[in-house]
Amino acid sequence: MWGSAVRGHPAEMRLLCAALFFGMLGWAQPGWTQNAPAKAPASDPAADEAQQLSQALSEAGNSPVDFVRALEKHLAKYPNTTRRNEIERALVKAAIEAKDDKRVIEYGERVLAREPSDAQILDKVIRALLVSGAGNASERALKYARQYEELLRQTRSQPPPGHFSEAQWQEEVDKGLGRVLACEARATGNLGRIDEAIALARRGYDIYPTAEAAREIGRWLVRASREKDALVPYADAFTIPDGRNTDADRAKDRAQLGDVYRKIYGSEKGLGDIVLEAYDRTTGLLAARRLRLRQNDPNAQASNVLEFTISGVDGAKLPLASLKGKAVVFDFWATWCGPCRVQHPLYEEVKQRFHDSPDVVFLSVNTDDERELVAPFLKENHWEQRQVYFEDGLSRVLAITSMPTTIVLDRHGEVTSRMNGFVPERFVDMLTDRIKDALKN
Image (tube, rainbow, N blue to C red):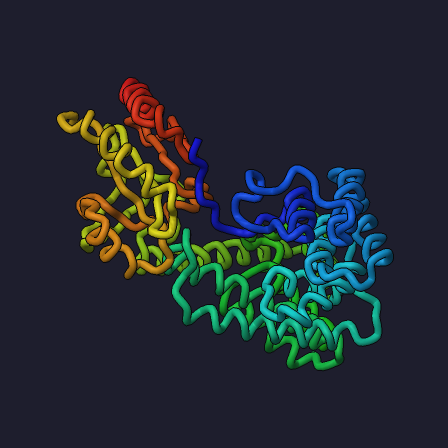
């Protein structure tokens, strides 16, 4: 069976274990499962070390706490290991899973000293430092937050990565900037610069309104003895739709809002009006933002396949809603994907079987980050350009993580089949049968 070409860097503990083990043996190449020797030479020190690490991690199972313990014991035993960088990165990932802020800081700062642009580790280290009791934690958090802000601002001017439309990527970057400025506000306020903290939090909220930014505005207004001014941002933090705001966060916001209001007015009489006004204000603010995004990008808020409009290599636009009532076959591929080239003539053979069926539509969906490569690739390989489209964010909704992937929709736009990779000798008949099943629905 032909598998699929996978993009991305999985962080699960078992995959980290495999990467460490086979990397230490020098087998960290594509296809190692087929090409690795059955047993490494017993006299090889690297193989001995890898074998001990593999055993320790196997005994740790799925526990991130035990995973951390096993890696730390290994570093203590092999302080000069050539794989220290990979092991420390694995320790950060496991510490994040274990919610171990002390180790997130310890190993995260080591990784950032080597790789200062790792966004995920930057975010986790900043937040761990902000709740740390260390004497200079706020200074370090502020340094990393500014580093992260600069990284995000550089990202703004770059093309979106695969699986994001331009507007979706802009939305993600703005969210990140709003949150990192809230972190800068917290660190700056902790350092006693209250007015600067308020200004930073307001900047973050203006870029992207989040509960976290609103909360920081309220926090530092209270510290500045401006309780009346703090009521609005605390009410905003309590009411704003924010997927990262947990029930526990909202409960704390509600308690803080009540405390400040009672301090000013002696009771909570009239507080409900402030909450309702905040609800109307924050929902209206986000609705206006969504409207602007839709005007710039029809797929910005699309969450269902049929809500998407995809763009053709020839510039044509195809609203997928126009295909409702038909069976739709998506072939997700990329120019860098070797298996996609092998599958292509088989896919064309299936198309010929339904050549006279108006109720079946085949769409070739390219997922390349560099779109300018696609038209020359089609010409060079003599692939038909007609009905070749860019994914325009569709891959995210359909959770496409490898190529080739074939998706079949029924007449109602529901996914009835997903084929990751393919079996060459059976692919044509398998896809044919799945299309026929989709036509029945």
